[in-house]
Image (cartoon, rainbow, N blue to C red; front, top):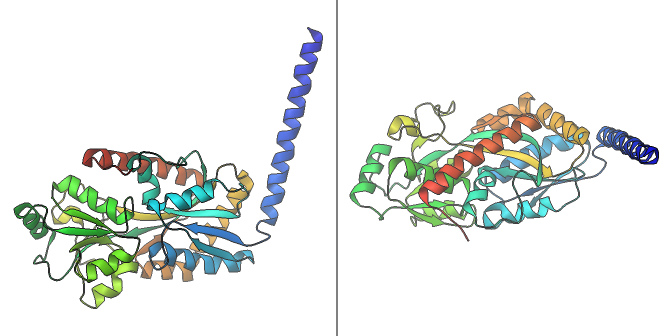
Length: 328
C-alpha cells in the first residue's frame, strides 16, 4: 500500500515537473517567435478579399516580426483543402490559416469534413469585419431590394445569383437572404473570384460581395448596389440602406476574417501572435487602409475569437438546415 502511494506521488511529481518544463519552453518559444518565415494559408484564390487583406496585414506584420509572412493560396472545396492542410501541420505557430464565414458554415454544409473547425484549430484573433453588399447587373430591371423580391416572386427560378462556390461567404449571405425573404433565386457557383467575371458577363444577375472585390465594377457602373448586409449602414457608403431596412427584416451578415493555427500551439506563443497582430491593427496606417476597403480592424483575443466562431457555427447551422442545403 505504501509502495503504491509512493509510486503515485512520484508520477504526480514527474507530471508536474513536465508541465512546468513545457510551460517554460512555451514562454521561451514565445519570446523568440518567429525565428523564420510564417506561412499563412488562404482557402480562396488570389485576387479576392481574403488575399487582399492578408497581404496588407502581411506587409506590416513582416516589419514588426523581422520575418516574412508568406501567403500560400490553396483554394478548393469551399475552404476545406486549406483547412485540412493547416490542421495537420506541427502546432508551432509557423503555419496559420486565414478563415472566414465559410469555416463556420462548412461543419453543417458538408456531410463529411476531414477536420473539426473548433477542435482541430487554435484561435489566434479575428482580424477584420467587412461589409458585404447586395449588387445586381444593370440589365436586371430593379432599383431596390423590394423590386428584386417582387420580380423573384413574379418569376420564380428565373433569376441567377453568383458566388465563389459552395460554402463561400457570398453563397451563405445569399442563402440567408433567400431563407428570410422566401425568394426563389438560383445559385450559380464559380471558383472563387471567377464569380465576379460571371456576373459582369451577365451569366448571373445578383451577387453578395465586398467592395474589395466589386468596388471597381460599381464605380464603373457595371454593377448596381441595392443594400448592405450588415445590421448598420456602411460608414463609407451611408446612402445605401441595409437589407433589413430595405425589405428583409432580421437580415444581418458581416463578413469576417481571422487567423487560426493547428490545435496545440503553446498559449504563450498564441498570446504573442495575437498581441503582435492586434498591435499592427491599431496603427493609423493599417486602420486607414482597411477602412478605405470597407473593413473594420478587430484584433479580438483568442478566447473572444473562439466564442465568436462558436456563435457563427450555430447561426449558419440554422440557415443551412432551414434551407436544406447539403454538399457531398
